[in-house]
Image (cartoon, rainbow, N blue to C red; front, side):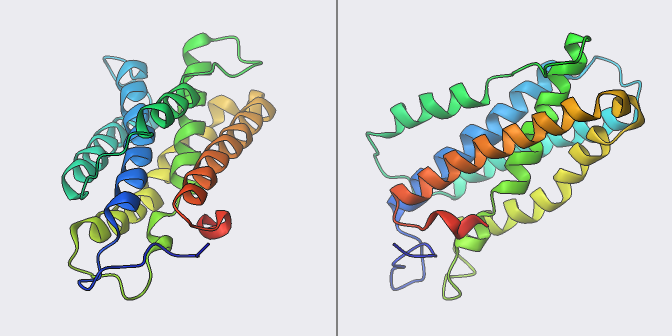
Amino acid sequence: MSQFLGPLDAAGRVPPLQQTRIAAFLISAHGALARQLAVALPGQLKAGWQTELNAQLHRETEIVSLLIRATSWLPEFTLPLHALTWEAAWLPKPVTGVADLRQAMTIDIAALGHAVHGAIRPAALLPVEASAEDPFVMALRRIEFESSRLIQAQIHFLKSEDLRPMRDAVSAAVEGRHRQVGKLWAELLEGIGIRGDAEA
């Protein structure tokens, strides 16, 4: 088990199997966020935090598009089973203790986004000798950079005054999503020979 991706090839590129599995996981997670945001956002924005989530919708789509193009894909016959597990995990779960269903769903989307952008640090897996010009390496670094900005959208909403009366329910939702995402990410890394603490 290693802390970093590799062994790299002579050009400093990540092995295609590792690229394939990591990209598939990230596409699943960010794709789920994009789909849920597209459904949850109203036709007309009436609150400031909604503009942040609207911007996030487009960033999530960009991340998926970038990964599809930057990854050196390899046929991986275990991916369909893994993908089913991941997609089931991202399904919306209305937050318990919130009467308004739309609000409960939006809180869960923000909690999932907070977990995906906060618990997954893909660039931390790259060894120093990884090629700075490799598209996959650049994509992982770009995703981590975007995540550090996108998590602000979830924080802005989750700590908004509108949610103050249900702060305990919001905190429980965020903690639950972090545990879920962290567990799946650690399992993925273990499956490609990376120690589970590499994302910490």
